[in-house]
Image 1 (cartoon, helix red, strand yellow):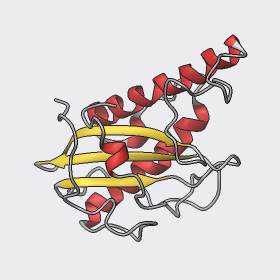
Image 2: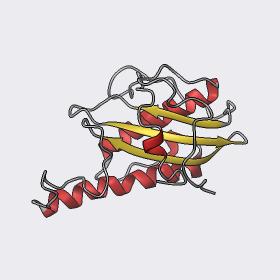
Image 3: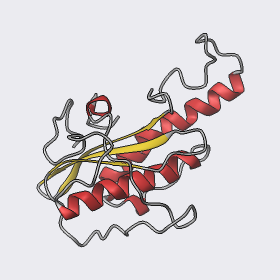
Length: 175
């Protein structure tokens, strides 16, 4: 997490994006960096992958700029991919190679969030090798969050109240 510690749980059921990446389905509305961003906390989500996991990007806009960003992947069971991702159901590492690969993808989540703050534009964030599925979901979710910020209103969400402008912020702001 980059600057929004604990915000993923707070925004738990935020809007499921209905947008797709050009390579994965219908075209998403393009994020236009020249348009202003409304201050607040905005949440975008990607479509689920074949396993039911989806990406969630949460951005905090202050003074029209991305002040904080967080990206997570939510598994079909609702849990966040974190330090246990890649372990078996008993919590053990059955396959070290698979666990390392899974953790490499998890480490990329913070890279994506940090680079979004630095670049201000999802398309300018570079993919991390070994985390390309997460990258596609990040692009979709971050674009959705920023388009909401440009529109100044929250899109339809799975659970009402989540992802709306001014949603509670549970952590520090990245600088």
